[in-house]
Image 1: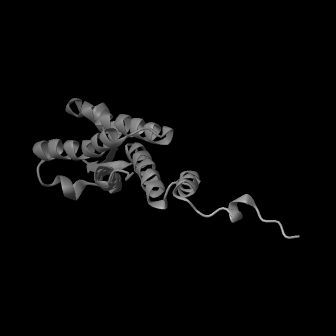
Image 2: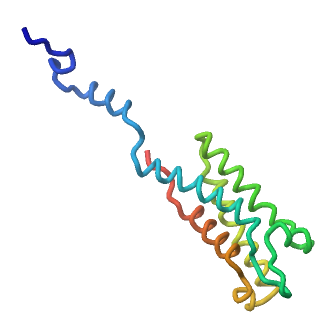
Image 3: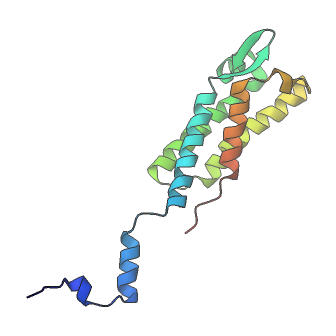
Length: 147
């Protein structure tokens, strides 16, 4: 005698379809966006310690800039907001506002620096500065998760 399982004997109903959809893992695009937010937030934290600019023959990173220039103390917002966005994202909380603020910080610092240093700033920028701007732009423009 052949036996059939209860799921094979029952036709698919809307309720059983909803139950199977609820047990499926989240779609890959939402997981990708979640991972991308974590990656870019971590990149912003790391980029704070990479060389940003060549100033008088010295390579300065975010840490040394804020230490040596009083008007750039606000630069601490970059790693702080990025770390908050990273932790909240890993914990599964909404990070839409925090990640966008963290992503906008490098551009606010750039505008402040352009105001003080002028157009030669782009020629003096090093890898860390460009990396910070790229990670910030990605954090700002990543779309929110769809439901």
